[in-house]
Image 1 (tube, rainbow, N blue to C red):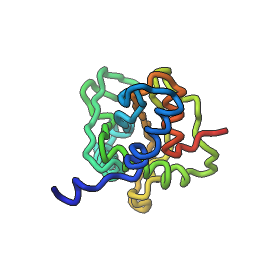
Image 2: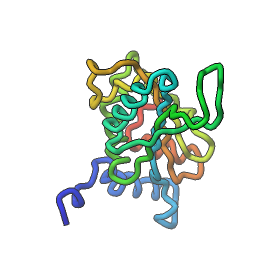
Image 3: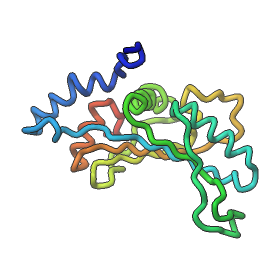
Length: 186
């Protein structure tokens, strides 16, 4: 077994040792498989400028690789749109799905480093749940992540971060994310 395999991310260790037992006790779960947990985190980045210049797509993929720690895939346009100069099959975005250790590491960096770097940050919206325990977060500027070299950025790009949990209700998911120190307003 290598040192990489023995390493457990900080938030994963916290979930196993503190959050899961506390949620099982407070919610009265009979089975450990009922306890909500993180399933995956999906990161999406729209690159509309890629229709004009291909270099925008290359830099977006490179930046997203640095942020996520794994290579994203380019998303293709499903329909042509003449007003936006987009053809069907043209790359116009990037997405990556994080699971396991990378997921916990990304969430840790998001909560402890990236979100506090947002200008005038007062917390994230606590109502952005979808009704099935998943949380969506929009970020306007991808340079809040410390992996991005600010001098080499050509344009500021927004990204969507979707945190998927196994929770059945939004209250369970909110309690789980609060346990991971998500800074909700109020």
